[in-house]
Amino acid sequence: MVAARDRAVRPNRKAIPVSTLWLSHPQAIFTGTGADSDGSAAGGVVVDTAAGTIVELVGSGTRPTTPPDETYDASAHVVIPGLINTHHHFYQTLTRAWAPVVNVPLFPWLVNLYPVWARLTPRALELATTVAMAELLRSGCTTAADHHYLFPDGMEDSIDIQVAAARALGMRATLTRGSMTLGTKDGGLPPQSTVQDPDVILADSQRLIDTYHERGDGALIQIALAPCSPFSVTTRIMSDSAELAAANDVRLHTHLAETIDEEDFCRERFGMRTVEYLDSVGWLTSRTWLGHGIHFDDDEIARLGAAGTAVAHCPTSNMRLASGICRAVELEDAGVPVGLGVDGSASNDASNMILEVRQAMYLQRLRYGAEKVTTERALGWATKGSARALGRSDVGELAPGKQADLAMFRLDDLRFSGSHDPLAALLLCGADRADRVMIGGTWRVTDSEIVGLDVPALIAEHSELARALVAG
Image 1: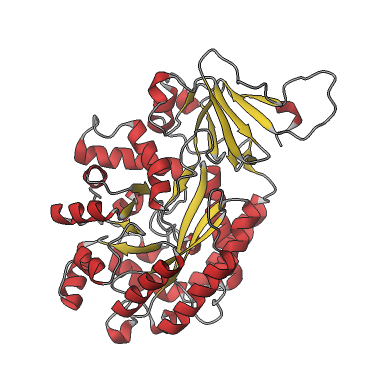
Image 2 (image 1 turned 90 degrees about the vertical axis):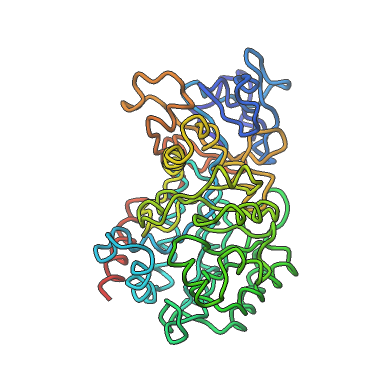
């Protein structure tokens, strides 16, 4: 329920639980449905806060069809669907801007960081997950996918820890049960202390699906299966994970085609390129979404599009590690669902989704030009595109019947002074923090602060554990 100062004055009424809330007359609204330019929703959005869904988009100059129980004046805001993050590594908030890996590409970056991450503890993961999700939430993100593949001794309950953290913040999360089976002694990159037996991985994957995976519209927690990458797992765990995912109707996720080094690794070890390898282990399907997806040739793009395999574009990380530029427009034009991800906070080194949208727009304009990569297209990748990548149709759009997940940004900061197009200003002028965020009809962020979270205390303990982790 919104604060008392946000309520419209309604005389002669006692306090009654709010059911319908009208977010009235925003400066601009991006619905993500393709109907934004005609002003069809200029009057705002009506939300059923009890059901957690959108009831109505109000036309310009009109009022809701049914008088709402409450009205919030959104005239200072730009309203967009809640942003959806399709690729992250929450635990990496503990190793942001770590000096030994600041100026290296992916493989040496991993080799240096794996031994540090192998010292992860349950409390450190809990705080790292909370920090990552809180940062995402404040940036207008309402749904986040995390790729967690580190299960050293003592960390067997890692996904359980993440579920509890997500529930505490009230965010939607797709939590992936990752895995590594190919250690250094077998020619992989991870240290042996971080690899697991395939039977242990598969048994825990089934346990997590049975315990936590929610189905249907409005799901808060979903589980996916996510072997880390071709250079850290065997073909067996790739194939077995695909079979288990199909049997349980859950999604599949992995890193693929992030660097040329990875392409070379696949050719040397498996005798094939990355997409061919993906097909050989039963992953070239619409159940799969891929992290990064940079180094595909024309034929591979066509094959991915025909299969409906999705790609999570991670522009900041790709620039930070000098991995390359994803062919996002060509992938999307070929039928590939394209979403956005911030990637891990040791390669991005942030978890800010609205800034990631801006970065995606600018990076893709370098490849395709300004006319093809519009503000609306970039926002579409982070909303409906990301929802498709995660296999969801109930989020990523503002439309009747969809989940009431939305973010509201104010444009009264100095950086916006003199701007004219409110929606364009959101990206071009660099919005970095939402004023309000709603998930399922409930405010999770008000006045740019997360409801119920002691951020200074979180930062203090998280920072202390981060220093201890790198110190050994």
